[in-house]
Image (cartoon, rainbow over all chains, first blue to last red; front, side, top):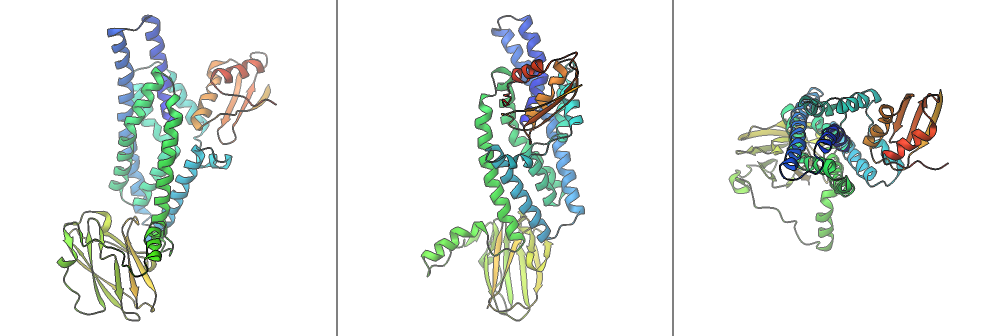
Length: 344
Length: 70
């Protein structure tokens, strides 16, 4: 953002200097005209950036789908993204010089060309071109979003990730660029700290989902439940009785002990903890009913199994015999919704 | 041709490197310039007949950056 903001600010500086020279004291209409003259190129820049990044997100998603990542591969990618995010956050906090290597530097030729374009004679095309060309110099945070689009393995999801990210950052970008051109970049330091904290949180979430997808027995998100179970050994971890439009009661009772039924809802898997007999193959029925969340992208990482369920219907999965005392974790493809089958 | 390597104390990200490299547009006689955010350095190759080290140092300061004293 700082790179892109800098480019745009550079491009606007020439415009402002011209204004300052022609209007010695800016008041009233003159001031309003300058406000518009600053706002218009920023908006053009953002519009071009939005289109360019959405297309790039679709491209990254398509790349991910071509690679046809298995749940474990996606988990490893998610872990790498998490480390990248945390590394960038620590870089922003200036924890150690080594973290500067988490920010890839664009080639000198690209930065020189962009710098000179931004300083060249300004036309409405300049901010449009600069906005679109920022895909060549993605900042550390944007780089992680691009990696996330690859991990999604879907062009539409990839496009949506980058679209949402660009829309989400646009008001701040607009505000900062506007202020930077009119006042100074005083706020930037504080803003960077907020971004760093957000990135740190997102990084841990990404690592957590990565751990789920690679089938790790240790997952951050289960720490509170495990701590609670430690202090209340007799208690059962509360599970929602109703999730979305589908409830446990809506799902037909299993006809035999080696047949399990799992409701796939918009809010996750219900129940999230299942028990099954050991040493015998299990039939797992996945039931959806108007389910549109990512829970439909069902995976069992340890078995390298993944399927995309219809929004309404039943899919039967056969799980090979598992030893007593073992457990299998299932999750959505992004590792956000999880559950476990314990074999006894 | 003279080569000058400066340690810059306050580069925050690669935008700073890009800004510093903009010195080549402001001063004559800059033959090559490369700023590295990762290494916090600025390497300038210049023609001493056209520009002096002091002018380059001044240009860095004008852009708002601090050069580490030797």
